Length: 237
Image (cartoon, rainbow, N blue to C red; front, side, top):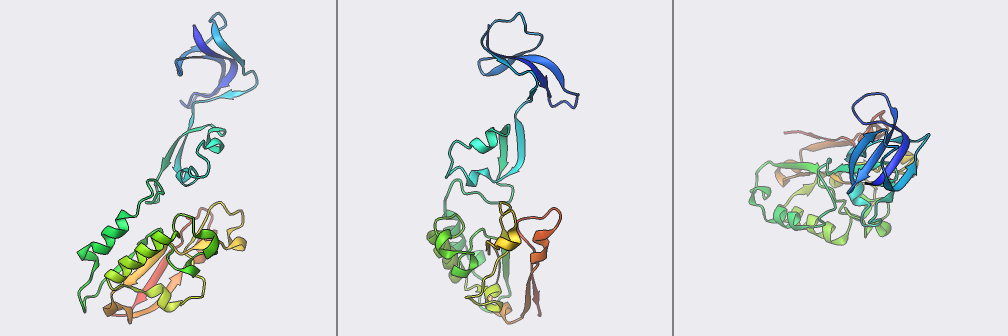
């Protein structure tokens, strides 16, 4: 006996074949039979005539892990048929929420250039440490990437290595400075709710040679954009 029988659905099975009208039987939360199940008894029978039935979709690039803190049931994706998600593609994740890596960064000897050494550190550090690195300091204080503990620890790591934040040398506060704009904004340019998550630090020996910093904001409006935009530094050595 089947637990659930779904009758008359147009089944898209993921093989590339055209959809076909058929029945699907489920037992112990597993698909047990596909075909004409009209003679098969079932605890629950669902009439899916005129509807499409498919295996759960796989979302290969998702940041839904960020939303689980606010909505633990994640109904929005399951209601769209998504049953598997791949997260962390961009190199960051709020889960587990831990700042140990910032302590390691502060203590790492390779990230503490010697006096006179020419060194540069660049990357998506996923933290906007300063008040004007986000669109609203007050509203972002409880959002991952601008929490007080993250900001403090990143600044401590910068201080321990005697790094110069050359982006802020060229664009001092209180000017706003962003390198990232969320995909969620229907009109990202009009909202302009950005964050400075990408950084360029240099050792003091290189800082004076940084002639120019460019943030290619226009790329955020490309046909298939990243939520991050390119940041370049011109260094005269």
